Length: 95
Image (cartoon, rainbow, N blue to C red; front, side, top):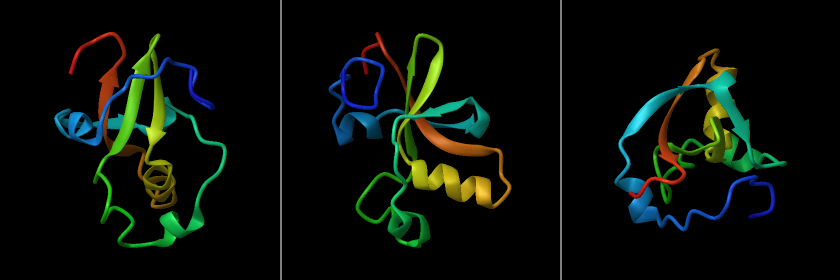
């Protein structure tokens, strides 16, 4: 297991994540895997310039773990939105 992640390593590359269609996920259904928030990413309007436009969520044992995109989730919450667009990968399924 990776530090902060209760699920085994999935081995997905950025291009594999990009093949997963985005969907809306409720913020209150997400469990974060990060212990710190980078304020530069939260406040930066161009924070997705080099990354994916959507958060990355891993579904494992019925729970949704926010692997990447904590700044997007916090920004959505600050804007009083209860959903975030994310790519959801279900552990045990092949991409």
